[in-house]
Length: 224
Image (tube, rainbow, N blue to C red; front, side):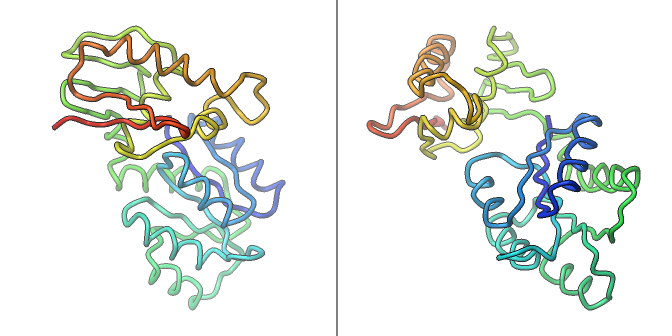
């Protein structure tokens, strides 16, 4: 499912946008502050950003500039009350992809989101291929040499996360927070159980291995 980061300090609007995106098949990730959004991007794979401009602390311009230094391609849509041409010029000069003026029409928002994702080829890039392994995000299924590997949805998400950022270490806590939730009563060691299952299911696969980083967590090593 396509993840869209919604950065909007007005909580009611943030919830409304997220609810609308969820109802239309997307996976919204709400953030009330830009600096929190940058933290989320370091922990999660985000496909698109919808951001306000006038926010406390880091504003939308600063946020978009910071994002562009990290990722040149991720679509950024400004959703703001600023309707002057100088603000629009500043946004596009920084590198945003589209600009909507509040109050927004949700149907128009959906059309713009679909257009940006299509333009970025994200809708057609829902398969992650590592050697002879293919992870299909639409099917939530994994294949090795064309044969499907039985796995749970959570196992798929954990593996997809690791393989999306090879050599990057993810702590047990970070994986727990993302895939079990902050309020989960499960112990972080539950992650170890899932890693053991993944290693077992892909033990004959030479495309990658999941390595333990002692005292921290896990990372995927991709074999060329």
